[in-house]
Length: 209
Ligand SMILES: C[S@@+](CC[C@H](N)C(=O)[O-])C[C@H]1O[C@@H](n2cnc3c(N)ncnc32)[C@H](O)[C@@H]1O
Image 1: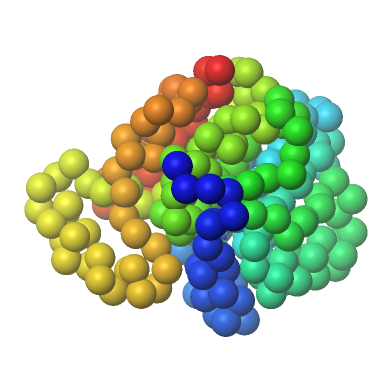
Image 2: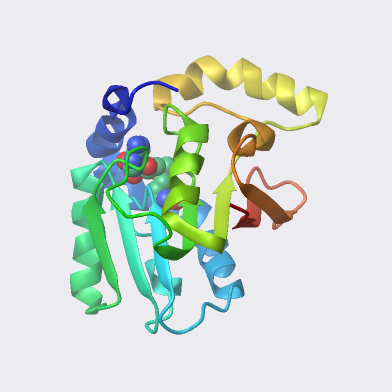
């Protein structure tokens, strides 16, 4: 594992440079899936929720006001947009902080839920992200990942590899789900897609530490 200080934030720079376009491009692609997933969890009152790589806060509308949500991200411009949504809507149950998800400042066993939407393939070390997520969440906490993973279908996996030089330039790399969760105290309880052709997989699991 590389030392904590070497965590690179290059992706964050990319998202800062493009933050003004983010909602225009990705609301349509990501928003419904993220929000339906959160709503399906029936989050209980007072639950403490962490969202890593929260970006501009496409998820925000789905969180019930009876929970406490902390979103973190490295990109100040993305966070400005998230803060703007929070203040425009008067959401008192949401806050966002500038923080590296690979080196979080939270104490161990603090959160009841953690969300990682479209971020495991953006950070330079997904396993380390998951180790941090399992450290700061309680034993048994629910952990939800939404991402595009390398397909098990050989043709689709080949296409993923073909696209890799382009996607790397855009700041993400395609991993298999196994690469993300291996060696981490996490059990995937439900893995599904919202449509047969969807590129994105929803993983609902638990911290098993
Ligand atoms: C593809 S965006 C996803 C944003 C949001 N989760 C969504 O689904 O719309 C990836 C986000 O991860 C953030 N990010 C990248 N590396 C990070 C890190 N080490 N710690 C925290 N956030 C990070 C980026 O700044 C960016 O906002």
